[in-house]
Image (cartoon, rainbow, N blue to C red; front, side):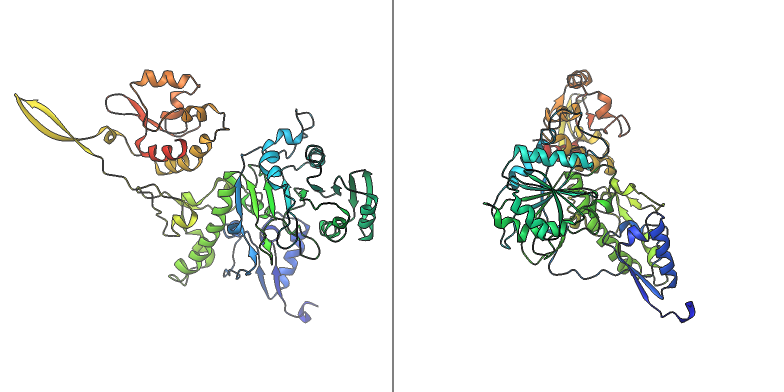
Amino acid sequence: DAEEALPFHLIVDEADKLAYGLDGPVKQQLEVLVDGASSVSFVTATAYEVMRDERFKCCDIYRLPRHPNYKGIEDLHWVEIPHKKKNARRDTSTTTGSPLERDPDLWHLVLERECDNDLFENGQPRIGLIKTESVIENQIKLANDIHVKMPDRFLTIVFNSSKIVIKCCELTTAIVHALKACKIKSKVKDGHSVCVTRSNIRDVLNAVRTRLFEDWSAIRPILIISDLVSQRGVHLRDSGYQWHLSFEVLRACKTTTVPALIQDLRILGIYADNVPLTLYCDKEVRDVLRLEIKALDEMTTRAKDDVARERPDMSIPEAITGMPLDVRKTTDRRQLRHGPARLPVRKVAPRPDGTSADGGFDLADYGIVSPPPPVARPVVAIARAVNGDVVGHAVDNAAAAVPPMDPAEFHHLTTKLFPKWARSDNDAAIARFFRSIRFDQTFRNMDEFKAYCQTFPVTVEHVMRPRGKWSFGQLFVIMRGGHVALHPQIRTQFERDFC
């Protein structure tokens, strides 16, 4: 009977997925519990989108104290690898080359770096998660290719929803029996691999730690190739909580939302040791992860302190809704959402000197460097004849005639496009064009500039019109005297990235 039921407090973990996610049977059952509870607390590590959700009605926000042994995003050692499109929904068997030949960065920048057999101080080998393939068949092919091209270097585990496959050159009958002794149902596939079913990754790692290495001549690093099953709520460590990931390779689709991107970081956790944690990803993913953690911190702090305390009659959702945010503190991935609509962000442009105008955290807290304040342009003394007398007067230099660049366009250009074009492996025409010029280079007239552009080929419209569908922005301008040069406002950043 509902009247005789005892009051209870309900704590909902992974709230952004369960309470604020898509409708389904689990959510319907959860709503029954929520309705019957005397009070409810929603808990999640990815709360940014929840607080922008139109259904967000919570009366307060609490930041739980960080565990002293927790290793988070700020503790990662970042290694940048070039972006590569993730093979999420297509079979790559018809494309040329083996998996490692199609992804040489994984081969040479990651695997050759992590094939060291030395143990860490806690006695564990290097253990890595490879999240580069979503199709199970391609995961198996990648494991086979690693086994062929780098024999004796790794123990490879393919972990997906249907099975766990262990591959190693020293898988003997005794080792297979060791797996069975650990109550893991196994089946020998060939002389180098074992297919394990009805088990979990913790038991497999525990068997490797306690039994398998005793029969091997040398301990080798462990690679776990996985994707969809190694996400929210899955801990890739042995059952004794002694071994855990030391590195992760993350390739993210352009459609991956920010919460899903953070939940892909299975390398984070509470560890009693000091094993260094390395994340291999491209620059865009790295910047999004760093920015998102700081943005969540700013939102909760400002909502509770800067706004709510000044107006006690305002609710937390109202404070968040009315909160302005500098456009440089946002990311395009926040526009992605797989579910109900959410409230828009009040984006504000930076001040002309590049400083933030939102009244929130300083950009330095985000690692964003503001452009230097404009320097007074030098004045050039010009002598001219007036009725036979020489009269001196002061005029501004040629740059004075150039209109200032839009702050949002400046930020997009200097933080996203310039670093992308400056990479030597970027063979796009626009990238080759910018790598070929100097920051102070000028062209005598428009015809000379147009002829130079056509050699790549790049059109004048690509670099001289306002930013739009067919233009990157007004990167080049016509100076006094008719010569063409880089916009003076971006020359310092251009010299930093290209010279």
